[in-house]
Amino acid sequence: MENYFNYGKIKQYLKNPTVRTAIALSAWLLIFLFVFWLIRLFSVPRYYRTVKPVSDGQVSLYLTNYILPELHNKSQYGQPFDLVISQNGVNDIITRHIDANSLQRSGFSDLSITFKKDKILLTGKTSYWGFDFITTVVLRPYIDKKGYFHPGASKIQVGKSRLPFAVEIVKRKIFYKLASLSDDSNIAGVIGILFSGDKTEPVFTLNHTTLRIEKITVRNREITVSFLPQ
Image 1 (cartoon, rainbow, N blue to C red):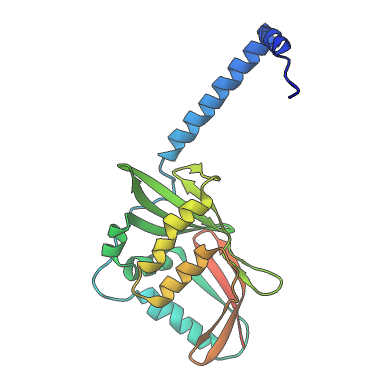
Image 2: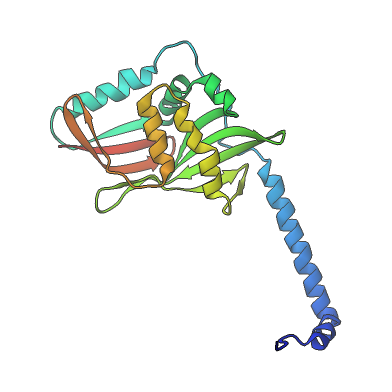
């Protein structure tokens, strides 16, 4: 077998002080970057908040007194309309419709949603090997030109560090469990769609009226969903 390496020249090359300095600096830079990434892994993002599930047996008033009436009333005219949903309102729904005991058994706590321009952050605390980590899934939902909904769940962050090599593992082993934490089948279905990574037709029926989602616009602390009655 032909030898493609000239070890003599390599050794001679490595004796060059400039080369050795460059290699040492590169090694120290890699070590520094790894330590920096590791420190950020245990850091707490600014948008993280402690959330206590509400277990009084009451449904979310934001859901029953705002979202559902708005959908019902605006869909009656048969014209396109927008529904503006607040970050606080969505978090109220989460705290009341996710079973706290199931959440704890699954090793999760403090689930919350943060709306930022063009993206949705789903955050929760989980534990591994006795350490607490703040895990964030970044969603960039959109409707494509053919009218299909894409959740855009492609980025996973732990603390303040990205995990580009473990996106699918984290999604499968952690966040797919969220769909089983709610007693509400609709909430569970929505969670399943968000993390499946598959496109879906954004059409549903409310009070005998078929609604299609035409556009999703995410801003700081709110999201606007544009509907078209059919």
